[in-house]
Structure formats: structure tokens, C-alpha cells
Length: 541
Image (tube, rainbow, N blue to C red):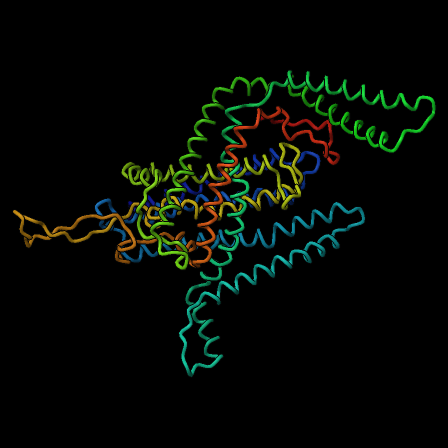
């Protein structure tokens, strides 16, 4: 009966996870439709963006599920539940592991094959003389380069980390045979882990660039709000009048038929370009000023301020916890050769203190972990929206409501895929013991002392699972298997956390010093020649 109840609970849990998948798909559809250009929408790029964004969110949602399942097999007193024998526990572990295999394989497929193919296919479609066959051929040619990189990562991950026993009389064929046997016994875990860790490294750089800034920009923008549309339109009208006067002054010099000097012609061209941009701003500001959505946003100002204060407190909590965790590794880890791996916690941080307390009331700890992950995702989205997509000092694309090109959406989803991969390590950095074992406990012997003497009475005391726990008493989450397969990646993640903290603090100072955003921030720019000036946006934040 207990086994049937447990299986029912697990089935219910997976059904809830399935319901969450439907919610994620609905959110991804709304998000992509919200930002994609109304004039340049493309079915293939839209479906690809929705699918890639959904995979990113589903992968991030698997971490709390993984922690919950390894914790579910044990009671709070440290004993296994009646139904949790070795076979059932192994089935649960394998299910989660196969889920990670599937999702990570899909991520590799999206990053190295599908998204590049769709991107280059759409780039070729912009050519006037291109036909479908030439588009597919060109896209496949460029995608082949990404596929070769993926293959190289899988091969390196499969063979390089293996510890091959050295025998004096072993032949080269025996060594190669041993490699394949080792690869087969690990079911490709090393190869997949190396590839995912390589992508996680890129995701770390994206998180440092976009997420760290988004964690400061998003809450402060909510608190400060935007400028008044009427006041902005008045200022814009004054600027238009000033530019028109300057244009008339320059044109008056050639009324008698004399040609303008080269410098004056250049100045006149710049003024006319500026005038066109100001008139675009004026039309946009007039549209927003009369919009009912603007009035609604004005009524919601108090709620935005509350959300902004909450987000900035969460960001500070996250940053302080990350700082203390990194400081603990710097002081108490085994050093750089071990990847700064630390067993146990010497300098506890607020999140690591809060999670054990919340474990006593199900499911508060899982709600907190899920909240942190989703906050990390949404601040990443905010950072990308505010900064745009850059390649070093060159801005490639802008992310704007209702005006984002298909190529930019593909880049956005690929960046989010990479950031999500780094999210798991960030959570592990904050609460390593919790991510490894969840709320599991195990029993240890304790001799009772009576009147200052050891008695023969032996009791069993429940202790939180840690690195000293017997392997058959504590189940490690499947997430951990992918986190510390290679020590050199852990070293990079450690220094990346310091860079993340520094960029967040810098972004916080910059965001505090900046004034209120324009009500049409990023919607009308000087380089909008490829976008219709009169295309209305349905959303104003």
C-alpha cells in the first residue's frame, strides 16, 4: 500500500511537471510574439525561438525536480521509506539522468545545428537572387563548421579526461581498446559533460555581461519609472523647431544660386537626418501619450515600485551569498588543482542558512530554488533587452517590443540557452550541500553517556548528508555529476563568480547614476532605416 501511494505521489509530481511544461510553452509563445517584428516575422525562426526558449526554461526547471526526487526517498529521521528499495531508487535516478541526457542533447542540437542553420538560412533569404536550394546549401555549409566544433568537443570529452592505467608491455591497440571500453562503460557521460561544460563556460561570460547588469537595471528601472510622455513630447517639439531654424539658416546661404561648401552640405545632411529622427520620436510620443496602456501603467506605478524594491533585495541577497560562498572557497578549499572544490561549509551564507529552515515546511525550499532560477532567467532577459546583442564593441541587434528581427530572436534564445546552463553552477555555488543531497539525512551511531561513563546503549542519530556519508545512505543528485566532472572548468567558474560580482556592483552604480528612461527608450533610434517609422508598438513598459 505504501509503495502504491509513493508511486501515485511520484506520478502526480511528474504530472505537475508536465503541467509546468505547458505553462512554459505558453509563456515562450507570448514572449516571442511580443518581441518579434510584425513586418519581418518568419514561421521557421518563430518556431525555433519558441522551442529553444522552452528548452532553456525546462532545463532550468529540472534542477528543483532533481533535488526533490533524491530527497523524497528518505524520511526526515534519516531512514529510507518503506517502498524505497535499491531498484526503485535506481529507477528514479535513471529517470532524472535520462531527462538530463535528453535535454542536454537537445541543447547541443539547437546550439550547434538547428539555430545556426535557421539563422544562416534566413540571412541568405535576404538576398534578392537567392532561391531555396542555394539558401539550404549555404546554410548547411556554414552549419557544418558548428557541427565540427561539437564533434571535437565530444571527442575531447570522451578521451582526454580518462585515467588510463600505464602498463609497460601494453600496446597502442590495447590503450585504444581500453579507451572505447571506458567510454562505453560511462555511457558517454564524460563526452556530454565536457561539451556541456564548454557551453557553460560561454554561458558564464554571457551571464557576466547580461545577467549581472540585468540584476541591477531591472529593479532600478522599475523603481525610477519612465519620463512623462507629455513633457518629452514638448521637449521634442522644441528640438524640432531648433533644428528647422538651423536648416533654414544654412539653406538661406544658397538662395542667390551659390553652392554650399562641403562642410555646410555635410552639416545640412546631418541636420536633416536628425530632423527625421525627431519627427519619428514626435509621432511615437504622440501615439503613446494618447494610449490607454500608458494610463494603465501610470496607475500601476506603486506596484512597480514594490516589485523593484523586492527585486533589488533579492539581487543583494544573491550577491552577498555568492560573495561569501566564493570567499569560503578561497579560504578553505583544496586549492586550484582541485577546482576549488570544498567539502562542507565553513562560512555560511544567507541562502545556505535559509534553505535548511525551509526544508522543514514542504515545499518552501523548492519554491525558493525555483524562484531564484526564474529570477536569474528574467534578469538575463532584462539585461539583453537593455543592452542589445553585441560582438565585442559592435552592436549586432536590438531587442525591442514588436520590432525585433528574426535573427535577433535566434541570438536571444541561444544566449538564454547558454546562460541557463550556467545557472545550475551558480545555484550550486550558493548552496553546494543542498544541491548535492537535498534534504537527505543518514543515521550514525551515538553512544549514550550516563553519569559521566559510556554506557553500552547505542542510539542512532540523524545527520544531514555530506561528503562523509556512506554511498549507500545518501544519493547524489544527477545535476552534480555534470558540474564537477572536470576540475579546470570549476576553476573558470570560480573566477567567473568574482567577475559576476564586480560587474553587478558596477552596473548598480551606473544604474543609480542614470536618470529616468525615456518612455520610448530603444523604440526610435537613428539607425532604424530597416524598420517602418510608423509601425506601432503594442507594449510600453
